[in-house]
Image (tube, rainbow, N blue to C red; front, side, top):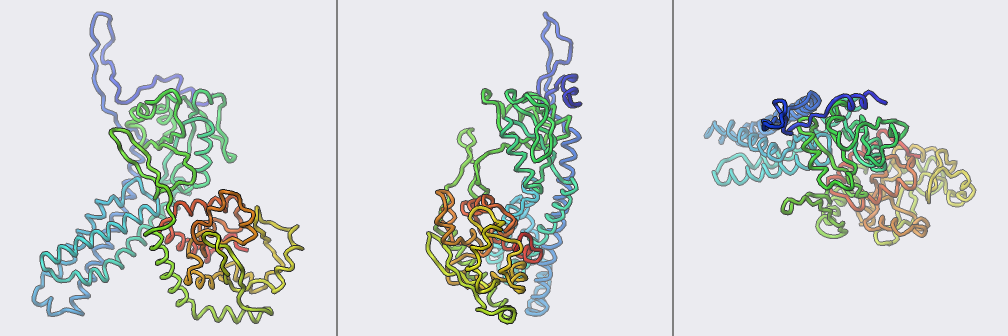
Length: 520
C-alpha cells in the first residue's frame, strides 16, 4: 500500500466548486448551503509562475528585436537614402519606427504567439510568429498608404525579413534553453495518466520516447476493471497506480500533478470528462484528452463546435494542389541555392574521390520515385567499383533490418567514402535530382526497386510523394532505426507534411551533418 493510497483512504475528498454545508444538518431544518469558488492549489500556482516567467522572457526578447529592427531601418533609410525627407519632417524619425513596432507587437500578442499551450512546441509557435508578422506589415502598408506617410517601403524590404528571422531565431534560442531545462526536470508539467491499462501504457510509452514534450509522468490511475495491480511498468520505469477514476482530483493534489492526461474514460459514464473537469478546477492547469488516431498530426486536426457538440475534424490527406506546388517551388529555390553555394566544394570532393580509389566520381543507381516511376539517383561514390558484386558475400553480416542492408564497418567503403558518409557529403549531388524534379529536398527515403517489390499494401504509401534527400528518417537516427521505425516515420511524413515542418527538418539536417549520428 503506497502513501498516496493511505492518504486517499484517510482523507475525505473535497471537490472544488461543489455546494458545501456550513451548519450541522438537522432533519427538521433546511441546510443552508453556499457556493465556494475554486481556489488555486500551490501546484497550480507553481505551474502558472514558470509559464509566466517564460512568457515574460519571450515578450522582452520580442520587444527588443522589434524596436531595434524598425528603429535601425528608419535611421538607416533617413540618414543614408533620404536626408531631405528627414529635414522636412523630423517627426518621421520617431513616428515610423514607433507605429511599426507597436503594430507588430500588438499583432504578435493577438495571435497568441506566447500562449502557454504552444510553449516549446516548435513549428506551431514559428507559424504563429510568421503569420502575425506578415499580417502586421500588411496592416502597416495599408495604413501608410491611407495616411500618405513615408518610410514604409524600406520597412517592408528590410525590417520584415530581418525582423522575422531575428524573431524566429529568438524563439528557437529560448526553446533550446527550455528543452535544456526540461532535461533537469524544470519548466515541465507533472502529469497523471488516467484510463484503461493498455491506453495508459500507450500514452506513457509515447511520452517516454518524446522526453522533451514537456510532460513528466508522476503516476497512473487505472479504471476499475484494470485496477488489479499496484503499479504500471513501461520502459523499465514503474509508476504507482493510485486512486480510482472518481478520485483523480484528489490524486492529482497529492502527487502535485498539474496536468491530467485522460487516456480513456469509463465505458458506462458519458459525462465523465465534464465531471472530471469540474473536479479539477483549481487543482490542475489542463486536462489533455489522448487520442490514438495513428500517425495523424497537427495540420490535419482541428476542433469544430456544432451546437455544443465538440467534434475533432481530421482532414483526409491530399497529394496534389497548391501546397504541393509550393513545395516544388521551395525545392527549386533550395536546390538552386545549394548548388550555387556548394560549387567551390564539389570539385574538391571529386578530386579526393578520384585520388583515393579507381573508378568514377559519381555513383548512379536506379531508385523508385513518386507513383512508382524509376529514376537514376546520383551520389558521390563512397565504395569500390566492385561493391555490388561483393554484396552477396556480406549478406550474412547484415546489421540492418527488414529490407535494408547495413554494416557499420562495411569493407566496400573507401577511406574518403567513410568521411563522406559520416557527414552526408556523398548525398550532395542529389540536389541535381531535386532540381530536375525526380526528388524533393524533404521526403521519404528513396527506395531500391528490390525493396519496392517486397512492399506490403501499406508501405506503398511511401510512393505517394517524391522521395527526399533528407526526411524524418535522416534526423531521427538514420541507420540506427529499425525497418519498422523507418517505414513509420516515412508514412507519418507522407500524410502530415507541411512547408514549415520541411523547413524545420532542413534545419535539423544541418545540425545532424555537423554532429552525425547513425551514419555509416
